[in-house]
Length: 130
Length: 248
Image 1: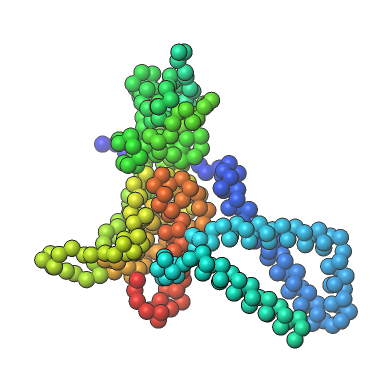
Image 2 (image 1 turned 135 degrees about the vertical axis):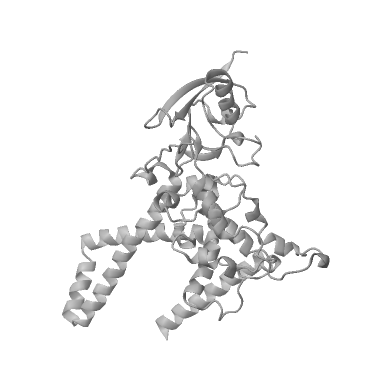
């Protein structure tokens, strides 16, 4: 018997453009580049601080310039996209708690959320006014 | 009542004649209760007997009739022509698989990797037959039941860009079966299939696109099954798994 001839369809370079789920996925992944840029911006500021007051003030002046503000606006949008899209897939990645299902109640979730909020508020208060 | 028709564009590829696939158009009369599969069967019975596609049960159980419908992976038996109006309807073979003829693909990639995930219970304890059945609590059943509903239709492979981009990726359905048996209380668990999960094409081949879980006709959620194992694989990598206790 002769070998069956098969045809392999090539994958389009822009495969991600044709499906909304793929586009959302690419937005999630691509937004990480702008997050990286933000991290670099902060690290650069730290480096300038190490060089003395004048260098640090120069960095602060640059932060207030129009291009820097525009860049920060873009980075903020990327941050929101990144956070929202990752938050959406969190239920798929979270390991099981091992708790029985009936142990997780609406009241328990609300109490945990309020408790976390309280801890965060306490941390901010301690950081700002201690 | 006048007869209603819908246009179906089918991808055709004859390995004996064609060097590449082409599209062929058919006008198919239909009624409200007709599935896309029935429309394709009309083509085969009345318009063109050489039009090739797979099907068997006609009720979303056998997993044979998966195709791309207007670019999305679907079971043709549970897709209705009335929902595809006004048409035309583009039917193509499942993406990321080599085409054998028309809509029939070579499923070798899935079948060849299936054995590697040991898709059967590797017993935690050998019990003699006389000891009776292994009993499970409803919670123990719930831990794997959803993943045992896979019908191997391979829509998730067609939905997964990583299957197309990374030839070593084990793939959504096989990795879901890996999780199905790992999560079974009768099974040894993680250690039985750790080599596959930790491999280059294992759970880390998944980049969490998530489209597999959207297209699954049985609501199996392969993305969840695969990503549940990433935490375990990471613990394995740092050698922490045995430290935290247990092979499960």
